[in-house]
Length: 278
Image (cartoon, rainbow, N blue to C red):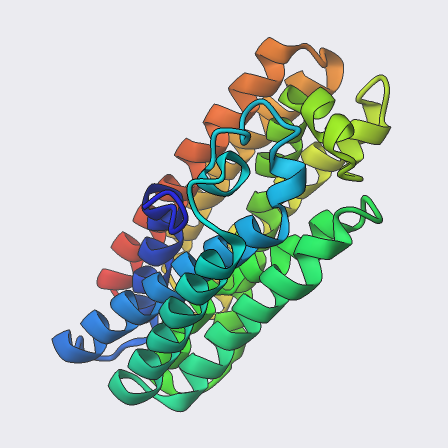
């Protein structure tokens, strides 16, 4: 359970389900179950691969040193095997229970997270942009499972999650910047002494999130009123980012982080409700 991190991956799996619902003309319970189980297994495998790769750095960070690999409760070989079995099983479930394209997108998610983003964040602060790619692909997995195609709607869903992730991660990284610096992770917050760039990036991405929510109406994902409501929630989130930009205190960063946990479910609820009225 510690390697698979099911609680952390629950939001990603829920986002897969939302992508499936928004893309499906009619819900197929068997396909929906396959896409949820398959994507959940792949996400769990990716989390395990990440912990195997970063076990030495996790041992240096107070919030991660109690994970099973730094403690020696699980060997790296066992962790690698566990991650491989989960990932392969998830890809097979997606390919057979949904369609091959959804499995390809899930594989891209796994590869970009475990073998591109994970080593890259030791080298450059730009890694957070790379890491936002696998984080934004779950709704695309769901959309492709429902439609068998990659369309503009799928990429808009990708963009919404991509833009949301940056304030979410920057605020968390600012709260734990000393830990990240100690472990050698080149996240922006660890290389930004006064937090000015971290907060500015958070604000800009929050504003982009609001603009992308408005576009949901133009591509037919939701009626204009619902898209405007989603943009309104994003605007409130941008206000939290603006407050962080003017006062880069731990309290403001924590408020922005907690706001990120609220705003994405609100956006999805609004778009799903709007889609149901189409």
